[in-house]
Length: 134
Image 1 (tube, rainbow, N blue to C red):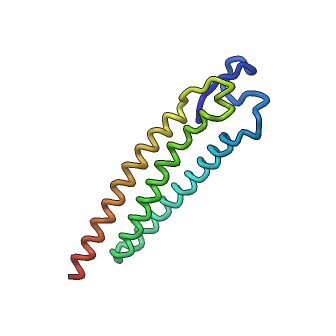
Image 2 (tube, rainbow, N blue to C red):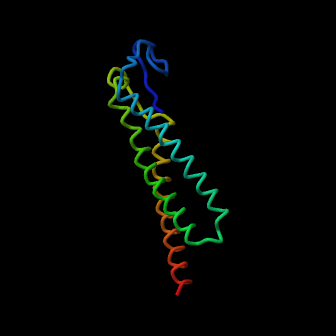
Image 3 (cartoon, helix red, strand yellow):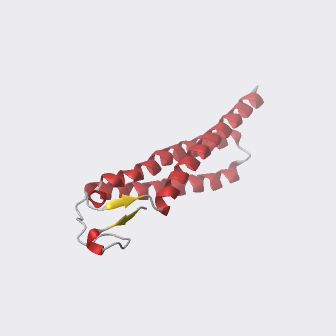
């Protein structure tokens, strides 16, 4: 995610030699990234799955809200990737924003916008369903 230089490697980009494998912050950030990927994939699958239930507006509303909440969780998890700067990796080396980190910022913003519009669409569908019941 991030670019950093290591005095041990000169000015090469990459993990420095002798990286302490017991770095709990680095391990946490790696787990957060994996969780973020899994939740994002599940939200994508639910969105595709909801295409098959266009006839059932009440269930479709639930899917939209669920997807919106998952995207909102992904917003927080995407921002949590920046905990990497508290790791031993960045404490012993100079960390800098790389292409991946800039993409992570963009992803967090897009996850939030998608969550906002997805939940809004879910509310519209619920209102339509409630109106049809009357």
